[in-house]
Image (cartoon, rainbow over the protein chains, first blue to last red):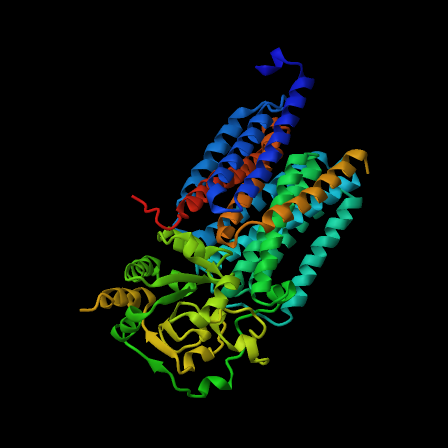
Length: 465
Length: 98
């Protein structure tokens, strides 16, 4: 092997150099991911960085048992490949699951390190190890719970019980106290599994009150935790590559969750402890208001004469798997000379950017996908705004009704378009249970039906006679 | 705290700031691929797992390390593959897929 040619000290330097180049690759990878034209290159250099890191590590002369490693690597790859081939609608669940795998790896390494070093570990390293295991442990179960809710194996409605926040915080508090105790008494090894179990329990408790609409924020937050856990592992193992890669992941998750919170005008604590989405099934629901509905033919007539159409897709479109029918509609309208754009709210879908991926998969050009701030000034000049499966992000009450739970949330100004069409199954309020005043405007036409079926009818009716 | 730990802290703080600056520039269009890419990158935990499993010091550490290698490899392989799939889907106007 290499050690017969090179002295071990050189090999150690070689490994460090490989790690340094690998860290640079990861930073370039994220930098190139910032725009579509360079994004593929970004993924490839990320792969190169990972290959260098793994290759460098395998040079480590203290690694002697390659058999276990080969089995574990093949096994991991065998699970990883099918997880990469899931349909795009399932990407949020998949992402939650992969957070769980990442956190599991960090937690297990933490536990193994502890078992090997509990007699000689110093305070600082033990502190990092405690944090690694606490963050990792809670992320494992929280991510699994989130995946279960996204896959609808678990009820998507928030699950609440009395004094929930006190119970949750005491569980976390106890885990932190044990973690702190272990820093000064690392030999008290019986407490270690107790700490892990408390964190696993806290992960479950943390996600119980979270509703589907808050999943984008929570996924981003779990992303951050998994990254920080890996970074803490870097402190334990004295490995700067791990520290850097973990910190990149941690800051990415943090930024995304801040963006998501801002897009809903809510704070972190409100998302985590507010149990949004199970509120007000209030008296208002009884009140009858008038609305206009239209058939596919009537709607198609309006679309045929429109010069500009903005389509506003929401999670309902993804649930109904309507994106390919929407593409057909897009093609027809574009062919007749109508300008068609898509208005994407930051929290549309079940994870940050989900809607863009779904539309890109349906072959809709990405330069037609507009962000909220770019599209809002366009609405007053828009002939038809077609809302498909979006609800709360179009509710004008967010702008003026101080009593509304979504007051202050930035919305798409759909109501300013000349005609508004809303494809919806029925008049039942949406996920958050909030009635949408958009539906009762004079300019609004309600198109009742399943998103996929109704868009299909529009596509059939549009060519006219 | 040793000087080694201090320098680790430096690296952590600087990497966090760098991460924030780089990631702030990522277009919202690509936030989903961003999340799966950072997920794949943080699977760098595989490095720590490889060393522990490969040294095979005790049965416990070998078992924990090997499972950790497998779990991290799921993200390495799956994370990069799905990110590549996703970013390949984004096409400009007029460029039709054959």
